[in-house]
Length: 70
Length: 396
Image (tube, rainbow over all chains, first blue to last red; front, side):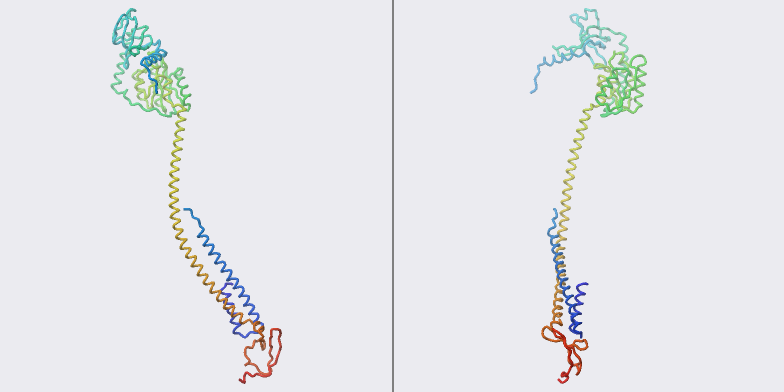
Protein backbone atom coordinates (compact mmCIF):
# COMPACT_ATOMS: atom_id res chain seq x y z
CA UNK A 1 0.00 0.00 0.00
CA UNK A 2 1.21 3.52 -0.78
CA UNK A 3 1.99 6.01 1.95
CA UNK A 4 -0.90 8.32 1.03
CA UNK A 5 -3.43 5.49 1.10
CA UNK A 6 -2.16 4.31 4.43
CA UNK A 7 -2.23 7.85 5.75
CA UNK A 8 -5.90 8.15 4.71
CA UNK A 9 -6.64 4.81 6.27
CA UNK A 10 -5.11 5.99 9.52
CA UNK A 11 -7.06 9.22 9.32
CA UNK A 12 -10.31 7.25 8.98
CA UNK A 13 -9.40 5.07 11.94
CA UNK A 14 -8.67 8.08 14.13
CA UNK A 15 -11.93 9.74 13.04
CA UNK A 16 -13.92 6.63 13.81
CA UNK A 17 -12.28 6.35 17.18
CA UNK A 18 -13.07 10.01 17.86
CA UNK A 19 -16.64 10.09 16.62
CA UNK A 20 -18.32 6.73 16.36
CA UNK A 21 -20.06 4.76 19.04
CA UNK A 22 -17.97 1.71 19.26
CA UNK A 23 -17.79 -1.08 21.72
CA UNK A 24 -14.68 -1.04 23.79
CA UNK A 25 -13.37 -4.15 22.03
CA UNK A 26 -14.00 -2.60 18.66
CA UNK A 27 -12.19 0.51 19.81
CA UNK A 28 -9.25 -1.53 21.03
CA UNK A 29 -9.09 -3.41 17.77
CA UNK A 30 -9.28 -0.21 15.77
CA UNK A 31 -6.71 1.44 17.96
CA UNK A 32 -4.31 -1.49 17.57
CA UNK A 33 -4.84 -1.43 13.83
CA UNK A 34 -4.14 2.31 13.86
CA UNK A 35 -0.94 1.79 15.84
CA UNK A 36 0.15 -0.86 13.40
CA UNK A 37 -0.42 1.42 10.42
CA UNK A 38 1.28 4.26 12.25
CA UNK A 39 4.39 2.10 12.84
CA UNK A 40 4.45 0.98 9.24
CA UNK A 41 4.09 4.54 8.04
CA UNK A 42 6.87 5.74 10.29
CA UNK A 43 9.14 3.03 8.97
CA UNK A 44 8.23 3.74 5.38
CA UNK A 45 8.76 7.45 5.75
CA UNK A 46 12.16 6.88 7.31
CA UNK A 47 13.12 4.46 4.59
CA UNK A 48 11.98 6.88 1.93
CA UNK A 49 14.00 9.62 3.55
CA UNK A 50 17.10 7.46 3.59
CA UNK A 51 16.50 6.47 -0.02
CA UNK A 52 16.17 10.07 -1.13
CA UNK A 53 19.35 10.97 0.68
CA UNK A 54 21.18 8.00 -0.82
CA UNK A 55 20.10 8.82 -4.34
CA UNK A 56 21.04 12.43 -3.91
CA UNK A 57 24.42 11.53 -2.46
CA UNK A 58 25.02 9.18 -5.38
CA UNK A 59 24.08 11.88 -7.84
CA UNK A 60 26.47 14.29 -6.18
CA UNK A 61 29.21 11.71 -6.18
CA UNK A 62 28.62 10.93 -9.85
CA UNK A 63 28.67 14.54 -10.87
CA UNK A 64 31.52 15.60 -8.70
CA UNK A 65 33.62 12.53 -9.22
CA UNK A 66 33.18 12.06 -12.97
CA UNK A 67 36.71 12.48 -14.26
CA UNK A 68 36.53 13.53 -17.86
CA UNK A 69 39.85 13.57 -19.66
CA UNK A 70 40.52 16.82 -21.41
CA UNK B 1 95.39 15.38 -50.19
CA UNK B 2 95.39 13.57 -53.53
CA UNK B 3 98.70 12.61 -54.99
CA UNK B 4 100.01 14.92 -57.69
CA UNK B 5 101.48 13.09 -60.64
CA UNK B 6 104.14 14.17 -63.05
CA UNK B 7 103.40 14.18 -66.77
CA UNK B 8 105.75 11.24 -67.20
CA UNK B 9 104.04 9.20 -64.54
CA UNK B 10 100.71 9.59 -66.29
CA UNK B 11 102.17 9.01 -69.75
CA UNK B 12 104.10 5.88 -68.75
CA UNK B 13 101.05 4.53 -66.97
CA UNK B 14 99.01 4.94 -70.16
CA UNK B 15 101.85 3.30 -72.09
CA UNK B 16 101.72 0.29 -69.77
CA UNK B 17 97.98 -0.06 -70.30
CA UNK B 18 98.29 0.12 -74.06
CA UNK B 19 101.25 -2.28 -74.19
CA UNK B 20 99.45 -4.84 -72.08
CA UNK B 21 96.18 -4.78 -74.01
CA UNK B 22 95.96 -7.82 -76.29
CA UNK B 23 93.47 -6.02 -78.50
CA UNK B 24 96.15 -3.51 -79.36
CA UNK B 25 98.97 -5.94 -80.11
CA UNK B 26 99.43 -7.94 -83.27
CA UNK B 27 96.25 -6.71 -84.84
CA UNK B 28 95.24 -5.99 -88.38
CA UNK B 29 93.67 -2.69 -89.35
CA UNK B 30 92.22 -1.66 -92.68
CA UNK B 31 91.75 1.90 -93.76
CA UNK B 32 92.34 4.55 -96.34
CA UNK B 33 95.91 5.92 -96.51
CA UNK B 34 96.20 9.66 -96.02
CA UNK B 35 99.02 12.12 -95.36
CA UNK B 36 101.73 9.66 -96.34
CA UNK B 37 105.33 10.94 -95.89
CA UNK B 38 108.73 9.32 -95.99
CA UNK B 39 111.60 10.34 -93.72
CA UNK B 40 114.88 8.54 -93.36
CA UNK B 41 113.36 5.44 -94.87
CA UNK B 42 110.49 5.40 -92.41
CA UNK B 43 106.90 5.82 -93.57
CA UNK B 44 104.54 8.13 -91.65
CA UNK B 45 100.89 8.15 -92.65
CA UNK B 46 97.37 7.94 -91.31
CA UNK B 47 94.69 5.35 -91.87
CA UNK B 48 91.16 6.62 -91.86
CA UNK B 49 87.69 5.34 -92.31
CA UNK B 50 84.34 7.13 -92.31
CA UNK B 51 84.54 8.02 -88.67
CA UNK B 52 88.05 8.12 -87.33
CA UNK B 53 91.74 8.37 -88.11
CA UNK B 54 94.72 6.67 -86.61
CA UNK B 55 98.29 7.77 -87.07
CA UNK B 56 100.70 5.05 -88.34
CA UNK B 57 104.40 4.62 -88.60
CA UNK B 58 106.24 1.94 -90.54
CA UNK B 59 109.86 2.00 -89.46
CA UNK B 60 112.09 1.27 -92.42
CA UNK B 61 109.02 0.86 -94.56
CA UNK B 62 110.47 2.64 -97.56
CA UNK B 63 113.56 0.49 -97.43
CA UNK B 64 111.39 -2.63 -97.61
CA UNK B 65 110.00 -1.48 -100.92
CA UNK B 66 106.60 -0.49 -99.67
CA UNK B 67 105.25 2.37 -101.69
CA UNK B 68 102.16 3.95 -100.18
CA UNK B 69 100.05 6.54 -101.94
CA UNK B 70 97.23 8.62 -100.42
CA UNK B 71 93.80 7.20 -101.19
CA UNK B 72 94.98 3.63 -101.27
CA UNK B 73 93.30 1.12 -99.01
CA UNK B 74 95.89 -0.57 -96.86
CA UNK B 75 95.72 -3.45 -94.48
CA UNK B 76 98.38 -3.05 -91.82
CA UNK B 77 99.59 -5.52 -89.23
CA UNK B 78 101.26 -4.45 -86.00
CA UNK B 79 100.70 -2.85 -82.58
CA UNK B 80 99.18 0.30 -81.21
CA UNK B 81 101.88 2.00 -79.17
CA UNK B 82 102.32 5.26 -77.32
CA UNK B 83 104.91 7.82 -78.42
CA UNK B 84 105.79 9.30 -75.02
CA UNK B 85 107.68 12.43 -76.13
CA UNK B 86 104.51 13.74 -77.79
CA UNK B 87 101.90 11.88 -75.75
CA UNK B 88 100.22 10.41 -78.80
CA UNK B 89 99.37 6.88 -79.68
CA UNK B 90 100.04 5.47 -83.13
CA UNK B 91 100.03 2.26 -84.98
CA UNK B 92 103.46 0.71 -85.46
CA UNK B 93 103.25 -1.35 -88.62
CA UNK B 94 105.14 -4.59 -89.00
CA UNK B 95 103.60 -5.41 -92.35
CA UNK B 96 101.61 -3.38 -94.85
CA UNK B 97 99.41 -4.82 -97.56
CA UNK B 98 97.81 -2.68 -100.23
CA UNK B 99 94.31 -3.87 -101.06
CA UNK B 100 93.15 -2.43 -104.33
CA UNK B 101 89.99 -4.57 -104.46
CA UNK B 102 89.03 -3.43 -100.98
CA UNK B 103 88.64 0.06 -102.27
CA UNK B 104 85.43 -0.83 -104.04
CA UNK B 105 83.84 -2.13 -100.88
CA UNK B 106 84.91 0.95 -99.02
CA UNK B 107 83.59 3.14 -101.77
CA UNK B 108 80.29 1.33 -101.60
CA UNK B 109 80.22 1.53 -97.84
CA UNK B 110 80.96 5.23 -98.01
CA UNK B 111 78.18 5.70 -100.50
CA UNK B 112 75.72 3.86 -98.26
CA UNK B 113 76.87 5.85 -95.27
CA UNK B 114 76.42 9.17 -97.01
CA UNK B 115 73.00 8.16 -98.26
CA UNK B 116 71.86 7.13 -94.81
CA UNK B 117 73.28 10.30 -93.27
CA UNK B 118 71.36 12.35 -95.80
CA UNK B 119 68.16 10.54 -94.90
CA UNK B 120 68.79 11.27 -91.25
CA UNK B 121 68.69 7.61 -90.34
CA UNK B 122 71.61 7.98 -87.95
CA UNK B 123 69.89 10.92 -86.30
CA UNK B 124 67.25 8.62 -84.92
CA UNK B 125 66.72 9.49 -81.26
CA UNK B 126 67.99 6.88 -78.87
CA UNK B 127 65.25 5.13 -76.94
CA UNK B 128 65.87 4.32 -73.31
CA UNK B 129 66.45 0.67 -72.53
CA UNK B 130 63.91 -0.92 -70.21
CA UNK B 131 65.18 -0.90 -66.66
CA UNK B 132 63.75 -4.29 -65.80
CA UNK B 133 63.23 -6.29 -68.98
CA UNK B 134 61.59 -9.68 -68.84
CA UNK B 135 61.77 -10.83 -72.48
CA UNK B 136 65.02 -10.41 -74.32
CA UNK B 137 65.51 -11.24 -77.97
CA UNK B 138 69.01 -12.17 -79.12
CA UNK B 139 69.89 -12.01 -82.81
CA UNK B 140 73.04 -14.03 -83.22
CA UNK B 141 74.39 -17.38 -84.29
CA UNK B 142 73.18 -20.36 -82.31
CA UNK B 143 76.67 -21.79 -82.03
CA UNK B 144 78.57 -18.59 -81.44
CA UNK B 145 80.69 -17.76 -78.47
CA UNK B 146 78.84 -14.45 -78.44
CA UNK B 147 75.58 -16.26 -77.66
CA UNK B 148 77.25 -18.20 -74.85
CA UNK B 149 78.70 -14.97 -73.47
CA UNK B 150 75.28 -13.37 -73.48
CA UNK B 151 73.57 -16.30 -71.78
CA UNK B 152 76.28 -16.48 -69.16
CA UNK B 153 76.26 -12.74 -68.49
CA UNK B 154 72.49 -12.47 -68.26
CA UNK B 155 72.20 -15.55 -66.06
CA UNK B 156 74.84 -14.20 -63.70
CA UNK B 157 73.46 -10.70 -63.51
CA UNK B 158 69.71 -11.03 -63.76
CA UNK B 159 68.37 -14.56 -64.15
CA UNK B 160 64.72 -13.59 -64.13
CA UNK B 161 64.40 -12.98 -67.87
CA UNK B 162 63.36 -15.10 -70.81
CA UNK B 163 65.88 -15.21 -73.64
CA UNK B 164 64.64 -15.76 -77.19
CA UNK B 165 67.20 -16.66 -79.81
CA UNK B 166 66.78 -15.50 -83.40
CA UNK B 167 69.38 -17.53 -85.12
CA UNK B 168 71.29 -16.01 -87.98
CA UNK B 169 74.19 -17.38 -89.95
CA UNK B 170 76.61 -14.54 -89.75
CA UNK B 171 79.10 -15.82 -92.21
CA UNK B 172 78.87 -16.71 -95.84
CA UNK B 173 76.61 -15.86 -98.72
CA UNK B 174 73.24 -16.09 -96.99
CA UNK B 175 74.37 -14.07 -93.99
CA UNK B 176 72.37 -11.05 -95.08
CA UNK B 177 69.05 -12.76 -95.82
CA UNK B 178 69.37 -14.86 -92.69
CA UNK B 179 70.06 -11.75 -90.60
CA UNK B 180 67.15 -9.87 -92.18
CA UNK B 181 64.82 -12.75 -91.41
CA UNK B 182 66.02 -12.94 -87.83
CA UNK B 183 65.51 -9.18 -87.37
CA UNK B 184 62.06 -9.41 -88.90
CA UNK B 185 61.09 -12.32 -86.64
CA UNK B 186 62.34 -10.48 -83.58
CA UNK B 187 60.43 -7.38 -84.60
CA UNK B 188 57.13 -9.23 -84.81
CA UNK B 189 57.51 -10.82 -81.39
CA UNK B 190 56.63 -9.28 -78.08
CA UNK B 191 59.99 -8.38 -76.57
CA UNK B 192 61.38 -5.76 -74.21
CA UNK B 193 64.76 -5.36 -75.83
CA UNK B 194 66.69 -6.91 -78.73
CA UNK B 195 70.41 -7.67 -78.72
CA UNK B 196 72.17 -7.93 -82.06
CA UNK B 197 75.54 -9.50 -81.55
CA UNK B 198 78.40 -11.13 -83.27
CA UNK B 199 81.74 -12.16 -81.89
CA UNK B 200 84.95 -10.75 -83.32
CA UNK B 201 85.82 -11.70 -86.84
CA UNK B 202 87.53 -10.33 -89.84
CA UNK B 203 86.19 -7.13 -91.28
CA UNK B 204 84.63 -9.26 -94.03
CA UNK B 205 82.53 -11.12 -91.48
CA UNK B 206 81.23 -7.91 -89.99
CA UNK B 207 80.50 -6.41 -93.38
CA UNK B 208 76.88 -7.46 -93.33
CA UNK B 209 76.27 -5.15 -90.37
CA UNK B 210 77.11 -2.23 -92.64
CA UNK B 211 74.60 -3.34 -95.24
CA UNK B 212 71.99 -0.76 -96.14
CA UNK B 213 69.04 -3.13 -95.87
CA UNK B 214 70.26 -4.49 -92.55
CA UNK B 215 70.73 -0.97 -91.18
CA UNK B 216 67.23 -0.07 -92.31
CA UNK B 217 65.83 -3.22 -90.71
CA UNK B 218 67.49 -2.31 -87.42
CA UNK B 219 66.21 1.24 -87.80
CA UNK B 220 62.67 -0.12 -88.10
CA UNK B 221 62.86 -2.25 -84.96
CA UNK B 222 59.92 -1.63 -82.61
CA UNK B 223 61.89 -2.62 -79.56
CA UNK B 224 64.95 -0.88 -78.14
CA UNK B 225 68.06 -2.36 -79.76
CA UNK B 226 71.44 -3.02 -78.22
CA UNK B 227 74.25 -3.80 -80.63
CA UNK B 228 77.34 -5.70 -79.66
CA UNK B 229 79.26 -6.47 -82.78
CA UNK B 230 82.83 -7.71 -82.85
CA UNK B 231 85.30 -6.60 -80.26
CA UNK B 232 86.54 -3.38 -78.73
CA UNK B 233 87.68 -1.73 -81.94
CA UNK B 234 84.98 -2.68 -84.39
CA UNK B 235 82.31 -0.18 -85.29
CA UNK B 236 79.58 -0.96 -87.79
CA UNK B 237 76.68 1.06 -89.16
CA UNK B 238 74.04 -0.67 -87.10
CA UNK B 239 75.85 0.62 -84.00
CA UNK B 240 74.79 4.06 -85.18
CA UNK B 241 71.08 3.21 -85.35
CA UNK B 242 71.02 0.99 -82.30
CA UNK B 243 69.66 2.57 -79.14
CA UNK B 244 72.72 1.47 -77.30
CA UNK B 245 75.96 0.38 -78.84
CA UNK B 246 78.21 -1.90 -76.83
CA UNK B 247 81.69 -2.94 -77.83
CA UNK B 248 81.23 -6.64 -77.22
CA UNK B 249 78.42 -9.16 -76.86
CA UNK B 250 79.14 -9.36 -73.14
CA UNK B 251 78.93 -5.59 -72.78
CA UNK B 252 75.67 -5.65 -74.74
CA UNK B 253 74.22 -8.19 -72.32
CA UNK B 254 75.40 -6.05 -69.40
CA UNK B 255 73.68 -3.04 -70.88
CA UNK B 256 70.44 -4.94 -71.46
CA UNK B 257 69.88 -6.22 -67.94
CA UNK B 258 70.47 -4.71 -64.54
CA UNK B 259 72.75 -6.22 -61.94
CA UNK B 260 70.73 -8.33 -59.53
CA UNK B 261 72.44 -6.90 -56.45
CA UNK B 262 71.78 -3.36 -57.73
CA UNK B 263 68.15 -4.25 -58.22
CA UNK B 264 67.99 -5.70 -54.74
CA UNK B 265 69.59 -2.68 -53.14
CA UNK B 266 67.36 -0.42 -55.22
CA UNK B 267 64.31 -2.33 -54.02
CA UNK B 268 65.60 -2.17 -50.47
CA UNK B 269 66.10 1.56 -50.74
CA UNK B 270 62.59 1.89 -52.16
CA UNK B 271 61.20 -0.11 -49.27
CA UNK B 272 63.17 2.04 -46.87
CA UNK B 273 61.88 5.21 -48.47
CA UNK B 274 58.36 3.85 -48.43
CA UNK B 275 58.81 2.99 -44.77
CA UNK B 276 60.03 6.43 -43.86
CA UNK B 277 57.31 8.03 -45.92
CA UNK B 278 54.67 5.83 -44.35
CA UNK B 279 55.93 6.59 -40.87
CA UNK B 280 55.84 10.30 -41.55
CA UNK B 281 52.35 10.09 -42.95
CA UNK B 282 51.23 8.02 -39.98
CA UNK B 283 52.79 10.53 -37.63
CA UNK B 284 51.03 13.41 -39.35
CA UNK B 285 47.73 11.58 -39.28
CA UNK B 286 48.20 10.70 -35.62
CA UNK B 287 48.97 14.29 -34.71
CA UNK B 288 45.96 15.62 -36.55
CA UNK B 289 43.86 12.86 -34.99
CA UNK B 290 45.07 13.88 -31.57
CA UNK B 291 44.26 17.50 -32.29
CA UNK B 292 40.83 16.55 -33.53
CA UNK B 293 40.30 14.42 -30.48
CA UNK B 294 41.30 17.28 -28.24
CA UNK B 295 38.96 19.68 -29.99
CA UNK B 296 36.15 17.19 -29.96
CA UNK B 297 36.66 16.33 -26.31
CA UNK B 298 36.92 20.01 -25.43
CA UNK B 299 33.57 20.84 -26.95
CA UNK B 300 31.98 17.71 -25.52
CA UNK B 301 33.37 18.43 -22.09
CA UNK B 302 32.06 21.99 -22.24
CA UNK B 303 28.66 20.73 -23.15
CA UNK B 304 28.72 18.05 -20.48
CA UNK B 305 29.80 20.57 -17.86
CA UNK B 306 26.94 22.87 -18.84
CA UNK B 307 24.50 20.02 -18.80
CA UNK B 308 25.83 18.75 -15.54
CA UNK B 309 25.49 22.21 -13.98
CA UNK B 310 21.86 22.45 -14.93
CA UNK B 311 21.41 18.82 -14.00
CA UNK B 312 22.79 19.49 -10.56
CA UNK B 313 20.38 22.33 -10.07
CA UNK B 314 17.52 20.14 -11.20
CA UNK B 315 18.67 17.37 -8.90
CA UNK B 316 18.67 19.79 -5.98
CA UNK B 317 15.21 21.02 -6.85
CA UNK B 318 14.02 17.47 -7.12
CA UNK B 319 15.48 16.62 -3.79
CA UNK B 320 13.97 19.68 -2.16
CA UNK B 321 10.55 18.97 -3.64
CA UNK B 322 10.47 15.39 -2.50
CA UNK B 323 11.77 16.48 0.86
CA UNK B 324 8.94 18.90 1.22
CA UNK B 325 6.47 16.14 0.52
CA UNK B 326 8.18 13.95 2.99
CA UNK B 327 8.09 16.62 5.65
CA UNK B 328 4.38 17.16 5.04
CA UNK B 329 3.76 13.45 5.37
CA UNK B 330 5.78 13.31 8.56
CA UNK B 331 3.89 16.25 10.01
CA UNK B 332 0.58 14.68 9.11
CA UNK B 333 1.62 11.41 10.65
CA UNK B 334 2.72 13.19 13.81
CA UNK B 335 -0.68 14.83 14.10
CA UNK B 336 -2.43 11.55 13.47
CA UNK B 337 -0.27 9.96 16.12
CA UNK B 338 -1.21 12.55 18.66
CA UNK B 339 -4.88 12.13 17.83
CA UNK B 340 -4.60 8.37 17.84
CA UNK B 341 -2.82 8.26 21.17
CA UNK B 342 -5.38 10.57 22.67
CA UNK B 343 -8.18 8.17 21.86
CA UNK B 344 -6.35 5.12 23.16
CA UNK B 345 -9.09 3.37 25.17
CA UNK B 346 -6.54 1.74 27.46
CA UNK B 347 -5.20 5.14 28.46
CA UNK B 348 -8.60 6.11 29.71
CA UNK B 349 -8.76 3.06 31.99
CA UNK B 350 -5.17 3.45 33.20
CA UNK B 351 -5.81 6.95 34.34
CA UNK B 352 -8.49 5.58 36.73
CA UNK B 353 -11.53 6.20 34.55
CA UNK B 354 -13.98 3.44 33.69
CA UNK B 355 -15.77 2.77 30.48
CA UNK B 356 -19.52 2.20 30.62
CA UNK B 357 -21.17 0.06 27.98
CA UNK B 358 -24.74 -0.73 27.27
CA UNK B 359 -25.69 -3.48 24.86
CA UNK B 360 -22.08 -3.60 23.62
CA UNK B 361 -21.92 0.20 22.91
CA UNK B 362 -19.63 2.59 24.66
CA UNK B 363 -21.79 5.13 26.50
CA UNK B 364 -20.57 8.66 26.03
CA UNK B 365 -23.80 10.18 27.62
CA UNK B 366 -26.16 9.32 30.49
CA UNK B 367 -29.19 10.83 28.86
CA UNK B 368 -30.43 7.68 27.20
CA UNK B 369 -30.37 5.59 30.39
CA UNK B 370 -33.41 4.47 32.31
CA UNK B 371 -33.95 2.78 35.65
CA UNK B 372 -33.20 -0.87 35.48
CA UNK B 373 -30.99 -0.67 32.45
CA UNK B 374 -28.19 -3.24 32.60
CA UNK B 375 -24.73 -1.79 32.12
CA UNK B 376 -21.19 -3.07 31.90
CA UNK B 377 -18.50 -1.05 33.66
CA UNK B 378 -14.97 -1.69 32.52
CA UNK B 379 -12.04 -0.88 34.78
CA UNK B 380 -8.42 -1.35 33.97
CA UNK B 381 -8.33 -4.47 36.01
CA UNK B 382 -11.78 -5.98 35.38
CA UNK B 383 -15.45 -5.69 34.43
CA UNK B 384 -18.54 -5.32 36.65
CA UNK B 385 -22.17 -5.52 35.65
CA UNK B 386 -24.51 -2.97 37.25
CA UNK B 387 -28.15 -1.92 37.09
CA UNK B 388 -29.23 1.69 36.85
CA UNK B 389 -31.02 2.70 40.01
CA UNK B 390 -31.66 6.30 39.22
CA UNK B 391 -30.92 8.67 36.33
CA UNK B 392 -30.44 12.17 37.55
CA UNK B 393 -29.37 13.68 34.28
CA UNK B 394 -32.95 14.51 33.36
CA UNK B 395 -33.33 16.43 36.59
CA UNK B 396 -30.82 19.07 35.80
